[in-house]
Structure formats: C-alpha cells, structure tokens
Amino acid sequence: MQGHLFLTGFMASGKSTVGRAVASRTGRTFVDLDDVVAARAGSSVSEIFANHGEAHFRGLERAVIEQLLLEPEPRIVALGGGALLLRSLRLRVLESATLVALRARPETLLQRAVQDGPTRPLLRSSADVELLLELRESSYAEAHAVLDADTLAPDDLATAAIGVWQRGAIAVAGGLASYTVEVTSGGAPERVAQVLGKPSQALLIIDGTVEQLYGAKYRSALDTAGVAFSQFVLTPGEEHKTPETIFKIWQHAQAAGVDRKSLVIGVGGGVATDIAGFAAATWLRGVPWVSVPTTLLGMVDASVGGKTAVDLAQAKNSVGAFWQPQRVVCDVSHLATEAPRGFRSGLAEVVKTALLGDADLLAQLESRADTLAADQTDFVREMVRRCIRVKASVVSRDPKELGLRAALNLGHTVGHALEACDGYGNLTHGEAVSLGLVAAMKLGAHFGVTDAALVRRVVDLLMRLGLPTDLTNQPLARAAELLGHDKKRGGKSVRFILSAKPGDFVFRDIPLVELQALTARLPEL
Image (cartoon, rainbow, N blue to C red; front, side):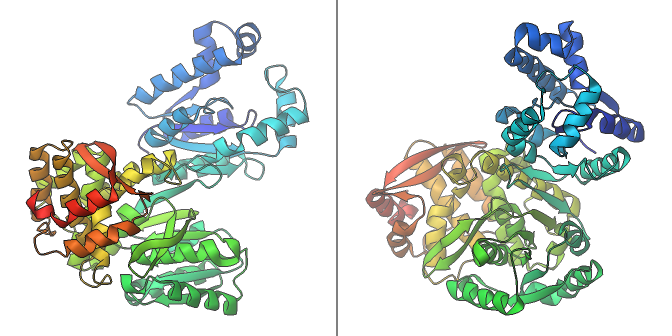
C-alpha cells in the first residue's frame, strides 16, 4: 500500500464512511477533504459556496490536494465530488496515489443527500443529480477502480478498496475506456480469470509457444472460474501478423458463436496481443478484451495504449485500430521461459522508455547492464513497472497519438524500416529498435539536438545489453525507400523524434527526401 488512497465519486456516495473504515483497518490516518478546506477557510463548505462561489472553493480544494500529494506518509483521503474535475490534477493523483471511485444510482444519492440536510450546495433536485452525474461520469471513470456503492455495503467497499490499494496497479486514463495494468510475479492465470466478470464466453487467443508452456494453466483457471471459452492458437512470429490471421480468427469466432457479451483474452508477446486486440476491435464492431503480455517487449511496450494492428506486406502495423483493453496483467514470472534473445530484444524498448522519461532508470540499466537477466525478479518487476508508468503517463495525455504520444516512437522510424527489409525474418523488433535508436542518436547529433556524449552513452549501453548497434552492414538503402510507409509521415515530411537528454526529447519534421538520404549514409554521420 504505497502512496495515498484517494476516494472519489459523487457527493453522498459514501466516501467518508468507507474512508474511515479503511483507516480503522489499516491504521492509516483518515483525511476528509471538505473538513480540511472548511477549517482552513474558517467557514463551512456551504458558506464558502454562498460567499465566494464554486471556483474559489475548487481552488481551495486543489491547494490541499497538492499539499497532500507531497506528504510522505500514506493517508486515506475522502475527496469532494468535484475535487478532481480538473484533468491535469486528476492525472497527477493517478500517477502518485491509488484512486478509487464510488458509484451509486441517482435516486440513492439524492436520498442520502436529503438525509444530510442543507450541506450539499449543488444539490436541489433529482434533475441536478442526473445532470451532474452525466457531466462527471467520464472523470469518475478515470480511476484505479470503480466500486458499486449501491450493491456493496460500506464494509465490503472498504475491503474492495484495500484490495485495489494493495495490488498497486498502474492506471491508464482514457475516460470511460480507462483501465489498469497489474504487474505481478506469479498467479497470472488465476488473476485473469478473476477480472473477467461474467462474459457469455471467452475467446482465448494464445501464442503457440506460450500455449505449450502455460496454456493448460489458463484453461484450468477459466474452467475453475466457470467461464465458457474456446481457444485459437497463433503461429508464432511477426511474419504471421497479417490480415490472413485475423480472417481465420473471425471464422473461428463465428463458428464458436462469440457474441457482443463475449470477451477476448490475448496471451503472448506483442505480436499476439496486437492480433488479439485487433480481432476484438473488429469482431461485431468491437468486443471487450484483456491483454496478458508474456514477453519483456510485450510488457514494456505493447501492454499500454490500446494500439492494435497487423502488418500489410512491408508496412508494419499499417492496418489497425485504437481499442483499449479492459485490463492488462503482466506476470514477470513468465519471463523465466522467454528465450534470451527475446529478453535482450525487450531491453531495447526499456532503454527507449528510460531515455524518454526516466533518467534514473537509464542509470540503473547502466549499472546492471553486464549482468542483467530475466531471473533478477525484483529488479525486472520494478523495471517493467517504471516503463509502464512512463508510457501510461504519455498515453493518458494523448490516447490517439495526436501529438505527445508520437514520442514513444523514438528509434522506431528507421527501426521499423530495417525490420521490414527482409519480411521480418532477420531482426527481432527489439533488435531493429536498437539499431533505430542508434540512428536516432546519430541524426540528433547531426541536427545539433543530441550531445555526442549521450550518443556514446546510449550506444555503449545497447552494446553491453547484447543488442546490435553497428549500422555498417545493414540494408540502409532499402530501409530508406521504406520510410515512405512510416505512420508519422505527413505529406512530404516525416515527424522524427530526437533525444535532447535523458527525459527530454524534441520533434522535428524532416523532409522525406532528406531523411532518406541521411538514412542511406548513417554510418558516416
């Protein structure tokens, strides 16, 4: 239970009652935000609204929340119903604390509010409740969990809230499509079965190699949970990430009677979860899905963001959709059976993520580079969590890659082109990203953005991690031709991501012709 536990939700949903119950059980300090604001202002909440207006009250709330976020001792905080309507503040809370929302029907909320007397300045009628609930629905959904305060008693709500707090999941904020990523060490099949709810059936899409290792455990967990399911086994490899595979899954879903109340479970590396997510996005115009990445690459990269796609010939991920999962479960114990080459490949995405948003992680990688292995469970688990946190922060601010999120493609422009040169049969994705990072660093130095010392630092780290860095013998001329297929191309330019320093990056629109010419002679730069 690291960090604070914040309870949000509509007024009269029971946040203070549940908060006090959690505090009593855990021995933590309980804080009622309204009481703190009133004490500092020397007036009741209703008096603050009447004399100074709602905007003034929200400012007082915000100041208290910002101070609480700096407090090192974890506390349980019951928030006012509108305390986190400012999205930038809500995202800060999601990133540094656990946020649980309580949900109840309008009639329940109004009944409770009437019982409380004239202390609810924004409530006058059932119409007020319904309007405010509709306006705030999306903001309340951006939480680590939403609990039903109609069907659960306060003690049960407290138990559920403590469970959410203990799991320490990472939230990806996307309005009504928000979800969490859990990073565990063991128990993934059972956890997946717990979070499915009650679908009419499940379609388990699983990588063939993973099926041999863990398939029986996932099938057993679904049987134990009483979830009917069918299974589709994917042929491993990027070369099978094609529209033809999606068509076969559609045929399977049709034969199995997968309906809109069904749910897709994708188990495997990034290829498997990309395929499963795209199948879920396109079957019956979209059914829910749960992602269970089993490789390091899948955990630190594909697990967050809802990017689902297949390749079209040499155009990587060119056919796809944004379709957010309902839940993601990353079990680092699965990495014990990942091939060493696959684990090393995933480290390229870890380096990329550290460069973008976690300078301390970059330094830790450098200190461990010569001995880093999948069986270093504690560090690997923390490494995965930190990468997911960086990506979740970016995706929460730009879910459809309209701006900031494009930064996550650092190293991917040239990397994707090199990966596609031989039909995805020579380089793994991570190896291609490693070469792409070298290219990005060289281009950054060429444009005066990246310091030469950082170029050497990154290349040295990649080499020590066992990743390729030598561009001399790579098919750069052919890769240059393929840059025209890059998803970041707009008109005659490609938006390229350059690293200024660890934790800082810039976008640069480079004319396609210039980028192709520079790519062809990268070893000279």
